[in-house]
Image (cartoon, rainbow, N blue to C red; front, top):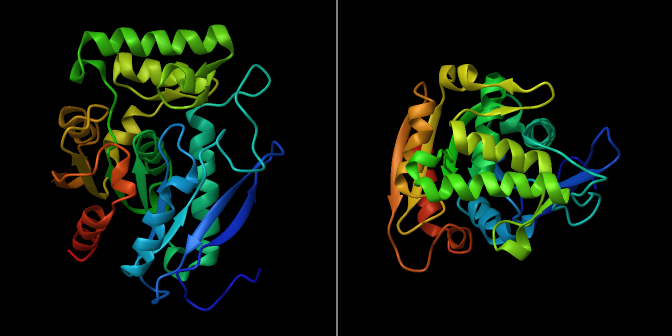
Length: 283
């Protein structure tokens, strides 16, 4: 496949190699205008990238260049399954976003300087950390059904559940999300760091652990924050916590209340989300 092609809404797949020997796929769908804004979609915890197929084609048809990366541990090919023999955390998710942004900049002229990053749920958390650490590579942030998972915005039951999930990962070697009906098979370090985030409201990751609270608070970027009516995984209070924890963001807030969408299904029925993104980009 060549590096340039005629603008088309046909998805193009590019493999990105990791230093550890695994790889993931960046899927690019081009808008008719190569200079149109460019958006990178970062999936939610446990979500296969293919779930967003309709979304990325719809973005391109709406005039927005788009890339979609795979979530580590959930690659269609080239990756590894989380377990005792393979572990990762937020730092690795941030590294994957960095690699995807760099590759997207090579492929789409409008993304060469900086790109917009759309994070869904956990993808928004990783996108926040990436933007805080690499602000010059991000033009703006879009959060859809994403949240700061601080327990006080959910209640004590969530605190207990989140800490149990982190503990299960350390005991079993991975978090068996499919069996427990929450996410997928997830890495123990990712779940340990996510549980700590839920307990403290502060994102710390890596070895040795790095607290990126100061960098996140200092980040000054435009942001579109989208919540969904009835979304129990990302209720409005947890969505609004993003801005409270990142006060430097210039936030436009949108709440979608329509039948047929929820924490996940908005990506399969993306018209209202895309309209909100278009309006925000045109501001």
